[in-house]
Image (cartoon, rainbow, N blue to C red; front, side, top):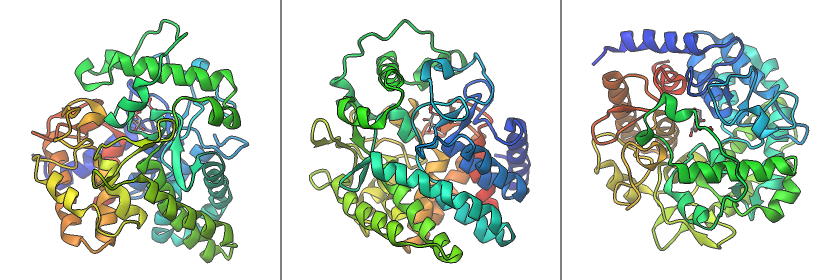
Length: 411
Ligand code: 9YW
């Protein structure tokens, strides 16, 4: 087990190593581009020792914003053949080659977080305020199903192969997907990555979007995959609350923001699966809940909804494995402790969950979760994710967001 000072040093070195000049990659080789929410986590890591660099990370991300307000999940600043699917497959239509979908909108929350720590940078936060509003408006216009926020691709939630997609995917026949060559499994062992079955469907959905030029109006009617998701709904709701706080500070109007908050507070109820006693996904096409307790279910405190509805589930799951929160409930039949979002622990999700718990007054649980995650990292390194049963590192190594949350916790 490395001591805290050694870990701090290592974490800073990882951010420096993954810095490509104005933006960081999640990790070399496996993910050689700028990812949306990874960059926001990178920013709070940089904030520990370099505030200017922290702001730049988010500013670079917003340089890729589309004219309709969408901020893409990947920006392909420089083509790298080590990653598939690249810009030629996605055919994004923004100012920088990009994917055609978004990612969990945590930027508003962490722009406010940076501003609180660095009030002198108010002009930089102000310059980001309108782009943030435009992005939120894009979600509320195109991805709003009665106040629950939907995704049109699993990659959009950042929880690529979680069992929530098993039902919606079973209804999809991935016709017309050309032969392809995966690169991810040349970097990471297959057992820790999504299956071929999932990749076929990921690519099918990319093909559908690219073929219509990522026309949201058309996709809304035609895509077979339209699923309301707790990661998106809860991060957007939380980020909208933070936008409101900034609007008040900047003396900007808040009426539209208030409407969004009210809508999403109502919409969160659509994600409450009373039968299973959890927040989960809701498959709009099939008209049913997905029935999975995931680490995203516990973002309800972070969003400020549901009171302590999830507390019993939280305590049950926290007691099942040595390290928590596993991305899928270990009691679920689809749980696999090493396979990506089907079981492993993700440090950055834990940071969001712990933030919500702490704010809701569950300070002891927030501290226990943070301590558990810090012990996991100091014993096993800055991996992309970890096996909850024994902490074994999995996926990519020297990972930006694991290093970043370590530093954010330390600062
Ligand atoms: C993809 C970069 C991304 C994360 C996601 C994670 C994975 C792969 O890697 O996605 O192609 O988007 O699931 O949360 O942002 O670290």
